[in-house]
Length: 365
Image (cartoon, rainbow, N blue to C red; front, side, top):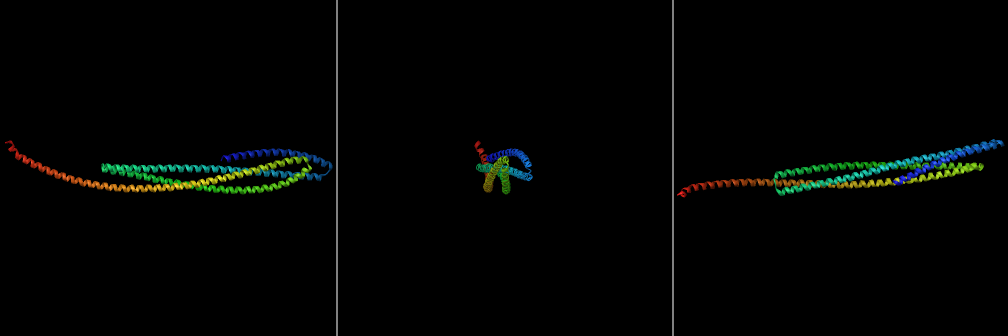
């Protein structure tokens, strides 16, 4: 882009220099017109003295025709400058459009990087939460504390995991929506690029038409040169002035050709940059599709891990319920044994008291 801006600055400088030279050429033409008037007056005096009116009319007609053709050639040069200015404005507009396209591509790449970081963060959070839930569950199983509290905490952890899973699903849907939006923007950029290609083709067609017009005007200018050479043979002063004028016109033609070549170079460079931008957009789209595939795989894996965790939770809950029922049965059996032992102990104490009462009189004696 720096080369484009420097080339544009050089082109503006060349156009300004051409305008200055054109002004100097107009001043020279004005002086030449004054000289022509003076020569005409001198010739008129000579012809008046020689009483040859036909020759005077012929010279005046030739001078008038030469002036008309010269003015037409100047108008052609002005038209060429105007068309060149329009083409420069079109190149500037295309450069602005290219800069906007490049900025949009950079914004899309930054958004994709942000989405990737967000997805990695969510994956890490899900993994950490699953590990924490698994460690907590193992710790609870190992401790075999209050089973009701453990089951409640486990259910809370499962509910938290479900909420995290729903958040991850929402985030995945949001990522899918943003990727669709980026795809739509990419299609819009493609349509803009096709419009630019059509505009380039139209510019090429206009340039070809301009070249044909310049060629035809150049032929007319060559005819005018021949007539000017005929007039120079008659008037030596006009020959020198017209010689300088022709050199200036040729120099302007060279400048116009140089500017056309620079414009063609700028157009080719813009086309290369647009092609490079298109390739970069295509590669970014492929990379986004690959990332989307990886995200879908990670999401499927997360769902599978979630299903496995739920199955494991159900199995552990069933085992805990079985252990609770077994402990309840053992507790009932222990209570029955304790009751039986208490009955036996009461019977033994009663029997012992009776025996003590029977033995106590003999002990006193």
